[in-house]
Image 1 (cartoon, rainbow, N blue to C red):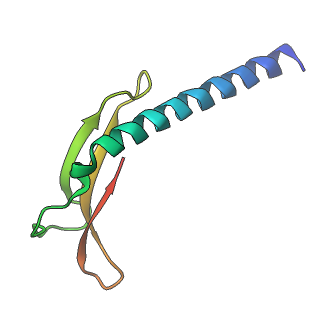
Image 2 (tube, rainbow, N blue to C red):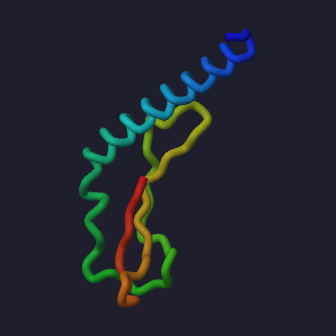
Length: 86
């Protein structure tokens, strides 16, 4: 393997490790923040894509920002539903 290929392999490995660490951190924080994912009742009317709530997550990799988000979407019948993600 050339020096260039070795350097590239190290870069890919470092990124994979950072991504895995971030996913683990987010997974732990998401488990702790389960109340965040309980939608308001009644769901206030709004257009698809409108934000219901958001909260910044700590523990993102250096130079990154991670958020928990809940926003409006529609189901297969066009009904307003809450959708969440991290």
